[in-house]
Image (cartoon, rainbow, N blue to C red; front, side, top):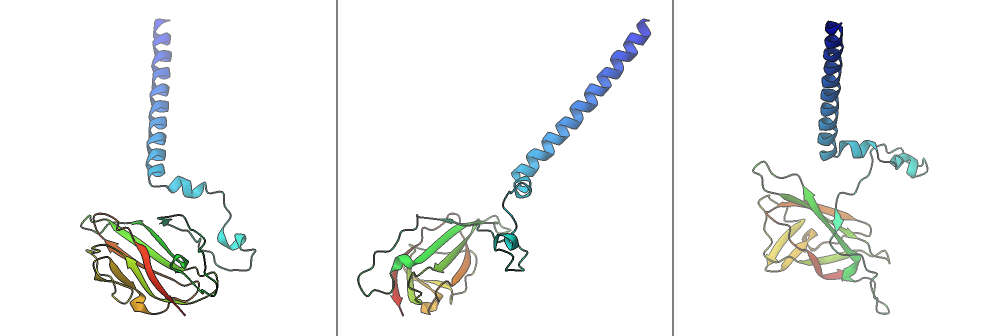
Length: 183
């Protein structure tokens, strides 16, 4: 009789150990996937982009915005007859994967959101002593002198147009529009 009781206890212990092991593995894997944000992408409740646009598009790849705005968008106050202002240029900046050397990288998007549909050129940023460990095409973005960077080589950024570039530095630079010229 004692032998049957110990066999039952041993079997129960084995079942509990197996159950605890499976539970531990499950929790470890789900914590790892949550850190990678893989689970969140499967649990996204928004419909695919081709359904959101009313089936007018055959685009299957989802459009996602990775960057956050540095400041809240403010409606420009226009003087009578003014086509555009510097607040029509929207800057989004956010972190991206670091370089193989470990230096953090940041992606910057510059968008012409002119309400009157104008093209904007001569876009200058306040950028401090901007520098990058990663080469940036100077026709897209270059520092001219302290706190003065030129966007798109001074050429027009068309209405609704966006250009982007990446830079690598140990910290993100605060970028803001200092001046624009309207077409």
